[in-house]
Image (cartoon, rainbow, N blue to C red; front, side, top):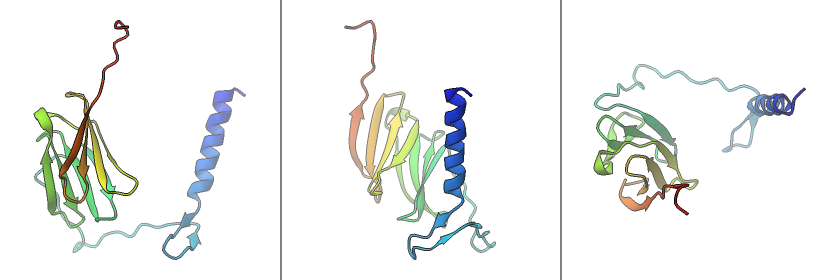
Length: 141
């Protein structure tokens, strides 16, 4: 068996074993299976008015960060469907990816076209800083 196949089998085994248990961090208890609870009709909220290209969850603030590539913006949408905050992306850019910092305090987006990484305060979507991305040119030495 090749090394690549062995690694794949090992990775699949570890993933399968890890997914067999769910630990509830609030109580410290573990269960072998987790069944999602379906939403009732009263809990469901239609979402309209934007296009969702990239979405990440901020469980601390109970909202989603949505990159809308059609309108070139990022939205903070509450679990109830309301838009809590919105920020326009610079120069009509689209977000290549979104990340939330480990402490959930900072939202990061990579903007491939203007070659930027932008950070925002995750609570307010107030811009923190822009970081230009240097492009490597192997012809320049």
